Image (tube, rainbow over all chains, first blue to last red; front, side):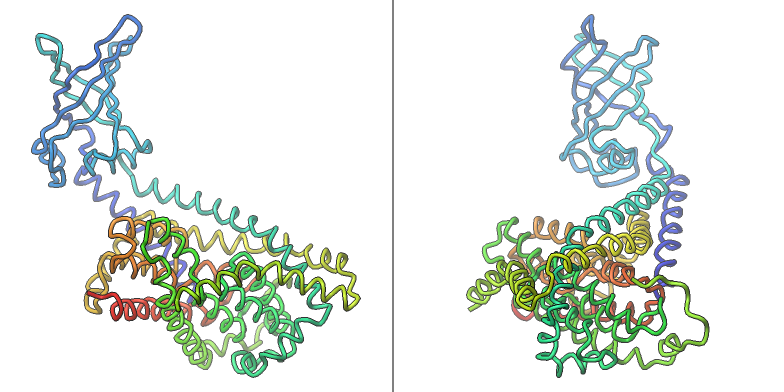
Length: 334
Length: 182
């Protein structure tokens, strides 16, 4: 299943992205190579040092909408603009994009890589008699293959993020593995495990009830309940390692592993700390109001997950994965 | 009542970790375990485990990143919108429901955005934060937990996890409609 989901995410993603790019290219959504007319109200004329005009670019909303074939601009466009004449005689312009800019231009600025500006070349400038305003005709920089670029960037960025996240675990991971090792040697996990045997033996019938895996799983579930994310992941990974010691076919998940994983993905917690923190930050009058509703929601998820994991593990297609008919694939056991 | 519950949980959460260190290590010392040596022995696996997760997490996050960046996510949301209106889910919250199992940071951003636009105490604000609190980032948990022990064939873990996510979202919608619905 994961194979299919994984390849679907990538293939569908790339196909949709390329499709959008082709669509943009054919319809010339961003009007690449088409000149636009505008009025510039000049506020600063060039000095001996800087060959720049500063002012405000003005485009009536109707002209803007017509140019791009859209309907989203609802008021006259007025944005700061800087025009610079180089020694070659070429005049370039930079339009500064802010919050109040038309959505379409904001998108274009984002897609061209620099969030707060659009740049282009000015073909012709006609100043009015008092030089306080000018009629210009300009060409904005090309915007193309937007999605293809976005996909490339996302792939590289996320690969980086994955490493950052993994390496970020080293410290807490080491800390908890150390503490757990001491608890194990002291026999503390066995005490904890015994108390919850009736509960755990039903959930994980394949795991001997005095196995260290049970202790680690209980600790992980307890940490999740209390919202101790820093402790929950290392404890969960410790539990997975212990479960893997009981795994007859390395590289393939056992029933107990799947059950344990589903409990974790359902994310039952007594205090949804992150959501509450954001509610506080957003000025909620009653940030804690979601405690009850979240417990209910995650409770539904947990029950549904456990029921489906127990049903699915009986299906022949998942049962046959457990058979050791071929030599187990080479996986180093941790 | 809710306030009291919250306070109790807050206190437990605050002291839980120091208390665990104290009991575990203290108990070990009493039981004559060579605490320092055993601790270091256990801790040395930390690096290995973290490094082992990397390929699994790269595979997972890159696929999700491509899916989101290409706009395929928006297409999926558009396709699912008619279904959501059938079950009475506000269309604004559909992207959050779909993103929740895929990306932790992405769904956190969406939830914040929804609260900013509609207000944290509005129906949509409460529903969004409940939806966020009703599930975990399934794909991330799957990659990290199975990655740590080199599991490549995940069998029925993903379908079961997704069923759990769907019921989590439906449960959140159900309870919020009863208590906060219009």
